[in-house]
Image (cartoon, rainbow, N blue to C red; front, side, top):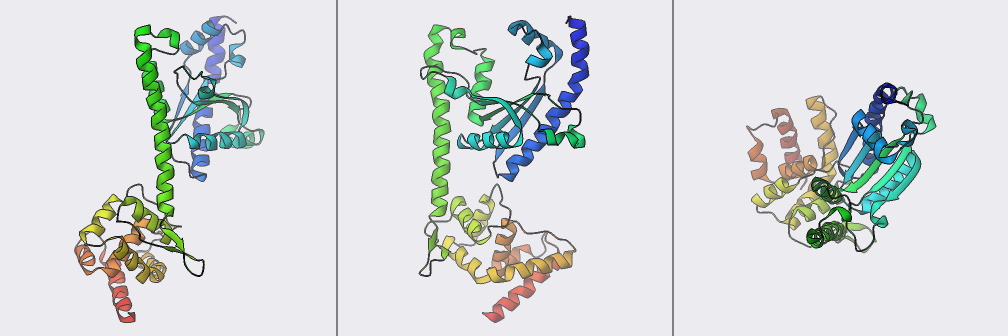
Length: 333
C-alpha cells in the first residue's frame, strides 16, 4: 500500500483508536478503584501518522495496520512494585490479552534498562454491545504498567537518548549502571516501608480476654498511629489522603493518642444518631468521612475545640445539634 492510500486508511481508523483509548482508560480507572489500588495516573496516546510511518520503516511491516499493535497505547503509573502483579491480574480478567512481557525479567543481571510490564490486548466480545465500544472490535491496544520510579528512569534515559547499552559511551556506562541500581533499590525500599507501615498499624490491634479485637494506644500520636485508630473505629468511612492537620489539632489540645482513644470510646455509640440529625437539619444525605467523625468526637468531648467553631464557618444549625448532644452525653455521664 502506498503512503497516500495508507494515510487515508489510517485517518479513517484513528478516531476509533482515540475512542478506544478514552474508554479503556475509564474502564481501567474503575477496575483499579474497585481493587483499592492507588495509582499516580493513566496516560494515553494514539500514534500520529508520521510516527506510524516511522515504525513501518524501522520494522519493515508488510501489513502495518494489522501488525502494529501499539497505535493505541496506555500507561498505568503506580506507586509500588507489588501492585504490578495485581494490575496484571486485572488485565487478564477484564481484557482479551494477546501477549504480555516483563521487561525487567528480560534484562540480564549486569545490564541497565527501563523496567515495566507490557501487554497487548483487545476488548472482550461482550463489551461490543455497549454504545462506547461499538465499532471497536479487534482493535489492539498496548498497556504498560510501571512504578513511578520505573517511569522516572525511563523518562530520564529517554531524554539522554539511551535506549540500549550500545548507545552509551563507555566512559558513562558505570555511572548509568549505578543509577539504574539506585532506582531499583529505591523501589524495593519503598515496598519495604509500605510493608513495615502495615505491620506498625496492625500492632495497635490486640485481642482481649474474650478474643475480641481492641485498639491499644501503645505509641505516641503521629499520622500512622492516628490512621490506625481511625481505621479501627471507622473502617467503613472514607479515608483522607492527609490527616496531619488532625494530628496538629489534637496535639494543640494537649491530648495524646491514649487521650484521643478514650474520647472516641466515650462517644462512639452516639455518632450515627448525630450524623442522622445533622443530615436532617441541613437537608443533605452526606456520610461523614473518617475526618468528619474524628472531629465530631473532639467537638463532643473537648470544650476548647468546640468553642473554636462558634462564630466560624460551621452552620449554626449543625453546631446546635452537637451542642444538644454534648448536654445529653454530659447528663448520661
